[in-house]
Image (cartoon, rainbow, N blue to C red):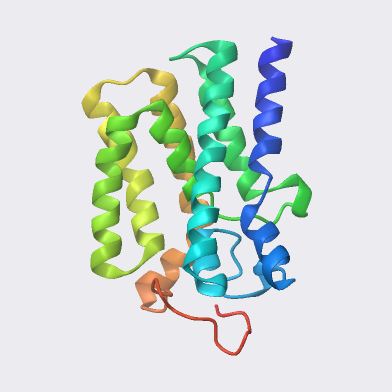
Length: 205
């Protein structure tokens, strides 16, 4: 039990490493949370720093989720609650990072890493539909919400174990909560589309 709790805590600490904040500080000496959308994630990194840094942040954030699940699997085994809880802990860390005053991102890239490791094919199915929606609408936030909403549906259709299904539902609740302002902006037609630039170096909301 002690080891299981330890890997969950370690997963949270791993998730708390905000690569977008670190990279923005390293490359431009800025706090990325004060620019663009104000979000510490790959999409805002694209807006503020460009494609190269954004791709790097995306990959590293995904790997956080992958590493957390594998850590939990090493301790608890496949199909148990331990890797599922480690994945959730990593996403919580990304969203509310200990090292950065609990101001993080929205956790979608880390969610991709977690769900792709726990359930590759359902996550892939949901991901394809999400990517198509982003391509059509250019709303990354909408695609993110479609991904987390469809993953539990895909899991139900494919009969995955309860820990994975409940993990996907918990993650979906997190994602919709973190995107609540984006949902309002989408409805009002004010949401930033992918490829939009920072105006005058100021925060764009």
